[in-house]
Length: 296
Image (cartoon, rainbow, N blue to C red; front, side, top):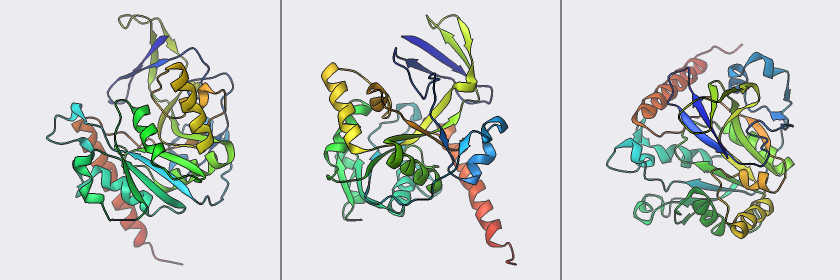
């Protein structure tokens, strides 16, 4: 097991993650899968050299989508009086932004809110598609609980962090289409930070070539049979995974990369709330400007 330390050159807090011994199409595997294009806004923000490698989007509708919305975190790093998903962002709780997006997303038939009992009253009776599941000790436990509450027969299971309120409808729909075609898909963006490898967490061993590294986001979308097969494997071998498509990687199955947007940040610290609000205000200004463009 090696530690990869990400040193940001853009003012974003440094992060670290571990890479296991198996190959990963996400973390610089030898044969990364093709990349799907989600929306024009995402294309504008990617490095120019990647533009030619994007495969064309397939404009197909996927029905009977099941959503697992993870909202059970406590958000200790926020130092707030409530979990971060209930802090106000642009006049509504962080969680509400994701709930509204998925309630209006074409093809969504079931939404499982993985949420502590104490916070469920706001959503009870709001929409017949919403049901609840308890949070688990770890992320994979929460996803497992959400899967148990998901009705049989869904086409794909779309797993999303409620702490990512900035994901766009276009990105989600493209990831759903990719998973419907390939079995599993994950939203991500090319790594912009410089990445260093360290064996002891004290000294730099070497610099990792970042051209093959991707920063993975959510949603992560998986066909239910694959998701269940992956869970069977990790439970049998007592393995731990930190994201959902790792379940598919462990099976040796491909995971499609769906081009995301750098704005789709995960709210973890108070500074993230400030940045998220700035992004939302910028989007509002763009929408307002577009509404006032005279038609030809």
